[in-house]
Length: 236
Length: 298
Image 1 (tube, rainbow over the protein chains, first blue to last red):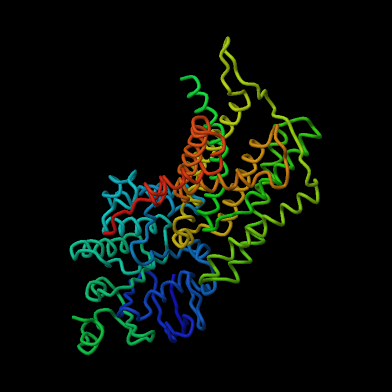
Image 2 (tube, each protein chain N blue to C red):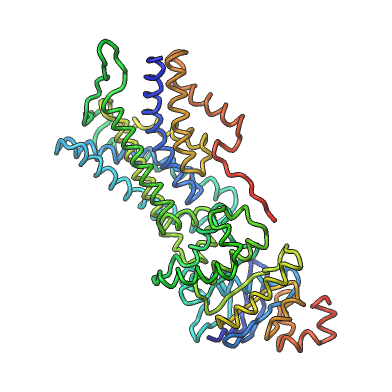
C-alpha cells in the first residue's frame, strides 16, 4: 500500500504545471503537500486520481501503475479523491451524496456498514440526511465529501484543501478527525493544503512544491522546524 | 362549466404528449447539454416502425413496444456514433457549444429523408387501439374519448416509471450525479460515458411513445412530428430545461393554456399561443418554472 511518484511532469497546454516531482508515501502515512496558490498541488492530486493526464513520469499504487487509468477504475483499486471546493453534489440530498460513495461496490452489506460508521462519526450528517446538500454549511459539506470517500473504503485518500473557506475551529476539528480516522482505518492520506501549520501537525511527511517543482520533502517535524523553509514557504 | 372541464381534459391530453416530448429533450439536455433537434426524426422513425408493426399484426401494443425499443436503440446510437465523435474532436470554445446542435439539426434532415425513402412522403394512417368517440352522458357530450384517457394513462405510466428509476435505483442516482457533476460522478466510480448513452436511450424511447400517441387517426408523414418537437421544446423551456418534473408541468401548462385560448379566443391563435405562454412564463420566471434555486455557498 505504498504510493510512489517518480519524475512526474504534467503540462497544461504550454504551461508546465508539475516538473519532475518524485516522492514516496509509505503505507498508513499522512503526507502533507504544501505550496502556494498555483504551485501544482491540485494538479498533482488530479493526476493521481486519473482526472488529469501526465506528460511523463511514473506513479504506482500497491505496485501497479496508475497513470493513464480512468478515475472510475482507480476508485475501484482503492484510490478516493475528494476534489477541491467541498466536493458534494448540491442538487442531491445528503443521503444520495453518501450513496454515491458505495455505488460501484458489490458488497452492499459492507456499504451499509460503512455508511453507518461515517454517520456515527459525523452525527450532523445523520440529522440532515433528507436535506439537499446545498443547505449545508461549508464545514458540513466538507464532512459530507470526506464521508462519501470513506464509504468507498479507500486505501489511499487524496484530499484537496479541506480547510478552504472554513473557520479555524472547524478546520481544527476536521484535521483532528482525519488524524483519528487514519489511526482507526489505516489508510494512506495525501493531504493538499495551503494551511501549512495545521497540515504538518498531523502529517508524517511533508512535500513542499513551488511553481511545479519539488522544493523539499521529508519528515513533517523536520520541515516545520527548518527556519529557511518556514520563512519562504510555510508562512509561519 | 362542462365546456370548461372538457377544455381542461383536452388540454391535459395534449399536454401529456408535450410533456413526453419535453421529457425526452430534458433527458438529453441534462446528460449532454445539447438540445437534440433530431429527436423529432428519431421519434418519427420509431412511429413509422410502430405503423409497420400495427399494419402487419393489428396489435397496437406490439407496435408501441417496437417503437420504444427502436427509439431507445436509435437514441443510444446517435450518442455513441455522433455525439462521442463530435466531443472527441471539439473540446471548447463557441464551436463546442454550437456544433452538436447543428449536428442534431443535420441528423433530423437525414432521418426525415430516410423515412421518406423507405415509406414515401405520402400520408399513412394507423388507428387508435380504442374508441376516439366522445363520451356522452344522456344528451350532453363531453369531447373526451377513451383514447384520450389512454394517452393520459400511458404518459402517467411513463412518468411513474421514470420517477421510480430516478429516485429509487442506483441507475437513477448515477444518471442524476452524472448530469449535475460528471467529475464527482467519475470519482465515485460511475462510468459517465455509458450512463450518458443510457440517458439518450431513455430519451429516444420517451420520444417514441410521444410520437405513437399523437399519430393515430392523423396523417403520418416524415414531417408530421415537427410541431410536436417545437411544442415539446417550449414545454421543456417553460419547465426550466433541467428538471424532469419541470418538463411534465411545462407540457401540461402549455397543453391546457393552448386548449383554453383555442376554446375561448379562437383557433387562429393555435401556433402563436405556445410562444405567448412561453413569453409569459419567462417574463415571470426567467429560468423557467422549475429553475434551480441558488443554494448557500458557505
